[in-house]
Length: 89
Image (tube, rainbow, N blue to C red; front, side, top):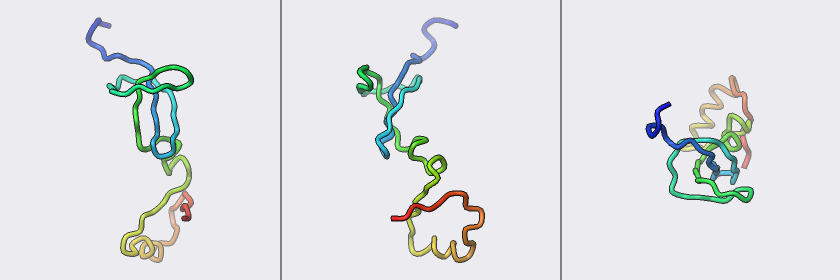
């Protein structure tokens, strides 16, 4: 590989803001913030969804109903094809 043309590939701390889950991975992403994790400083990458909070991986999803559209859809189609359970408030 040629020197000076590749981005800096290093360990970064990824923080899922929706469930306060943190993990270390390697990335070339450019960050402005640093954070400490397990006694070591890492560049910080903030995300909204990870495998800890995504409905596909957790098996739960929450539906925001606007004007009864969800109820209308459920009456028409029922739960045909649904593989996940709905989170109850």
